[in-house]
Length: 388
Image 1 (tube, helix red, strand yellow):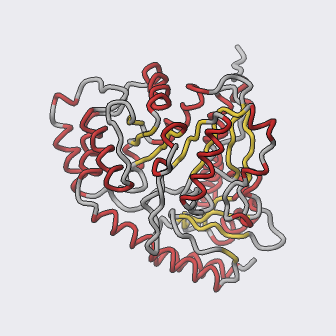
Image 2 (cartoon, rainbow, N blue to C red):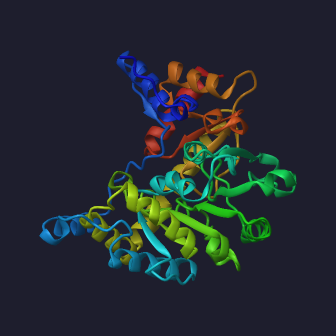
């Protein structure tokens, strides 16, 4: 019998990071010492007090049963407490907070709750690929929202045609931004909320990098803006803040009807997060945040090493204020993919082509600060040696 995939899968491009990993393995098999600056996966361990809480909770038989999809009351209360302390935003943990199996899960599911086939979703480009694929899975039409350097990698809402706005159901935004490392001021959030209220658009804000910021920068939550709670759901993750990518724990907060819609999808699809992991999440959010300060200082040091090194190598880039990514202009004569392949095959350095994040990412590569300073320095020396 011939096995045929569903049309929704046939329409998808190959997943970017899976492609890069295959090529990386081919180069590694040739004996090349790979410096992987591609996927944004923290190289540091999860803080010890979080691991210890997991151990204790895993030994408790009360945590061995099915968890609730919305998350334990204690975890949702910890989220609300963290939001109040960090952003000054008061949340009702009963219906304005829902747990997620990593923020990616919630982002992938939100269009299923609110997008009907044929409705439009504003998707930033360059942007996290899941925004577009989740829209397509729900039968929605991705409408590209260009992010360009001349506008600080913020979308220009005045350029969106009125005909598109009339048919738009959701809008994805992400600041601090992956992959560009751009940061949005509160005034931009106010502009976005005004647009959403006027046109009945739900804002889905991916805020996963809010705690990875430098030089005193303190990124905002959308929910700090007046009126945001009427139109916004904000996605967050413990992955980057506490080095917990493999733990798969995150949350969404905001408008109770939007949160409730996402929750209804989850009741039919998943069974929640292992409660021992949730207790570890409580320890992370409620405990001493010194580990976060240490993490920020480490990434800022790495940023400084890499930025100065790349500039000395002749590459053009802006100094990022947040995220652990550096968004680098591709040298003349290369496409994003060509320069990525050049660095991989000649220098053994894995980067990510900007075009993999959407058409507007062409002309850039993304470099992750997820190796130590010595490896970053070595990467710079290799780039200088092979040239471009």
